[in-house]
Image 1 (cartoon, protein in one colour):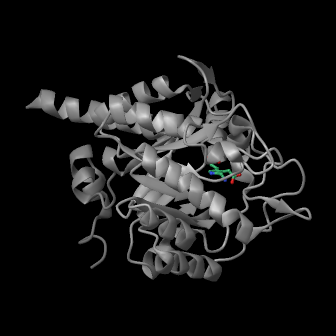
Image 2 (cartoon, helix red, strand yellow):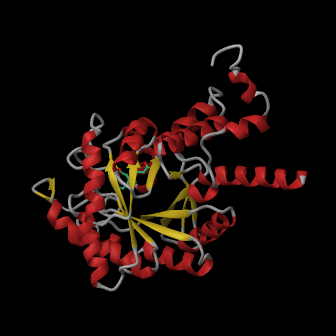
Image 3 (cartoon, helix red, strand yellow):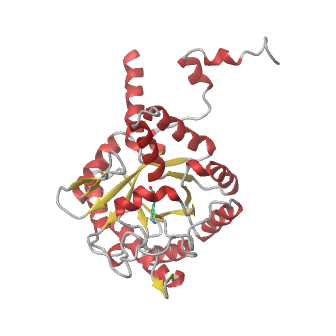
Length: 333
Ligand code: PBG
């Protein structure tokens, strides 16, 4: 059927009709909100490169988690910023480190909130790499027990989900075995199976002080040119025991999200990373684009590509807007 029988504009005439024809939806429980936790008492330190975000001490992180829970947000994803860094990243697996303390505070204050803890060494090592170094290179196999120890510390503190983002080979299997070995078979692993070496992590590294002192992460994170490799990573992690997988970054890798969706039958989360958030804010500050509209458009694009969940620095604002819409609908009744 073609014009004049088919009039595509018919379904675009009003918001009500557009809503009927809408193919992709977003709900607050599909959103995961990253939180940065640091040492201190009621301390809140804004992050310049991530407008609206701050490094929070554990009890403030718990208050934020409670507020996000009230908005219906699906989960929080915790990143630790320790005061002390060393060669092996010991702050990362310290049972009394900043992340376990934040997890315990959240468990108390917002027991219903689903807590994800990012597992990596780069925030905790003085050299800034995601594993331990030997002869100037990241030693894959020597890093595995340390990552597993961190995952166990977070799970013991009460994390529902551990999310390894280090990109060492075999870490999902090592973490699964370590968790099961201490009776934590119920702890979920969401692996950053497909994580590219990306320019878009800049603001995060500033927030976490985790830029490598020397070299870069191309020896372990993926090459932006590859998609077949992403499928191997994703199916490999699922075989090792990942319960869900992450593709990261999101916007420059929508084709990868789609391909991974077709490859594995576990939930997929896409991470709209710090640089994606910062660039929209920077352009909006100059008056070059409308931040609200760009926020919705990019988030929907990520869902449309096939992501079940979106990890996003916009999570709170998106959930607030969804809540406002629901309240307006309620008021019309
Ligand atoms: C830790 C980690 C990083 C991000 C999430 N986990 C930084 C990196 O790999 O350099 C980036 C998140 C973001 O940019 O928002 N390895």
